[in-house]
Image (cartoon, rainbow, N blue to C red):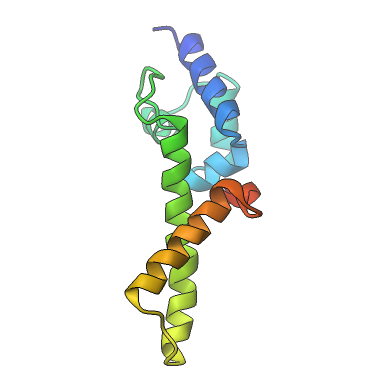
Length: 126
């Protein structure tokens, strides 16, 4: 496969998901300039390619490993767990922590907010 073909696949996937170069840089712990260089078609390290394709749910050839919906659901759950853990930690310090069933419901509700609700625009923000 030619590099230009891979780049087209990766760009298409990035656009389909709705990620920005800034989002990708933060999610991969790469610099904005490095990610921008990749999308401009410049040479980058293999490890950079690996990180970018992994975040997008692709393999090195630009083939889908994880479908977009599953990628979105995984990201929403990850963010929901993080947000709920912050609330739970604070509540526990105040001896007002939630039980497991309440926690599960809160995580599910928060995940749905990231997928379809008011927090949807923050799904890929880091």
